[in-house]
Length: 105
Image (cartoon, rainbow, N blue to C red; front, top):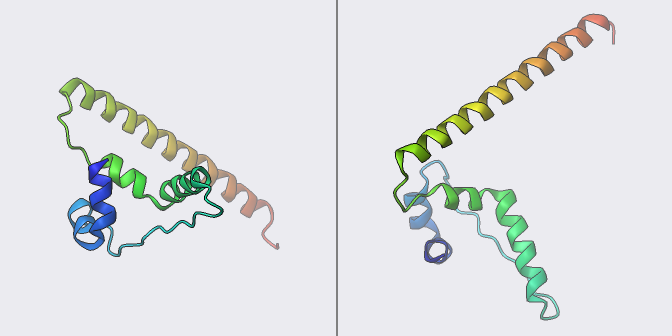
């Protein structure tokens, strides 16, 4: 959690050290309306998830990962990638069939 606090306090230097792919810091601001902190926190959580900040923080590993755990994670990533490629192939073939059926449209 302290890493998150440092990201929010020092946006430009923390982002550059945490991820070189993120070029510009985009801050997340949330209004607390009528003193409803729970609603503001849930809204901030949704914004962080959709903006990718949460994923970036999660990917920043600060502890050692065992080799067996690395293998499991690699296998899961491979499975996700293969499923994604298979879905893309299926969608492409469907689109090609639709285009070939209706050349005038």
